Image (tube, rainbow, N blue to C red; front, side, top):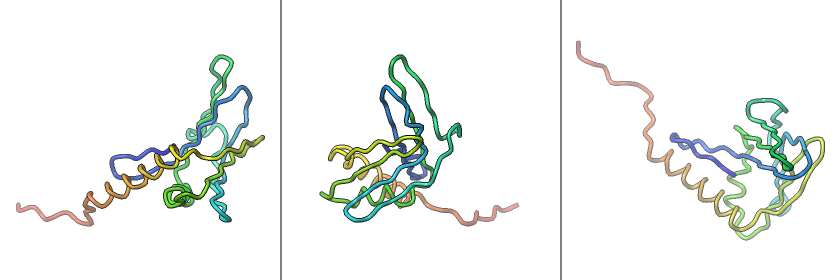
Length: 128
C-alpha cells in the first residue's frame, strides 16, 4: 500500500494480517532479476505497529525511505512483482495486478502533485 501527502511525498506501507506473528521489519521486492530492499524499521518504532485483534494479528510497517521500490513497481509493467516480508519469520506473495495498478496510480499522483506545487527558494521583499 502507498500513501501520498499534500506535498506529493509518497510512502510505502506493508500490511500483514494472519493468525500468527512475523514481526517483520523490512521487505524485499523481486521484479524480474532485480531485488529491491527496504531499509529496516525497528520493532516498536512509531512506523512499525503490531497489534492483536481477536484471533487475527496485524502488522503495519511504514517506510519513509523505500529505496526505489515504489518507482520500480510503478514501472514493472506486466512483470510479476514478488514481495517478501522479513522479520523473525518471513512470508512471500505476488502482488496482484490490482495492487500493482494502485501503487502505479499513487506514484503518478505523487509526481503530478510535485510538478504542480511551486517550490519557493526565497520570499519576495515586502515594502516597509
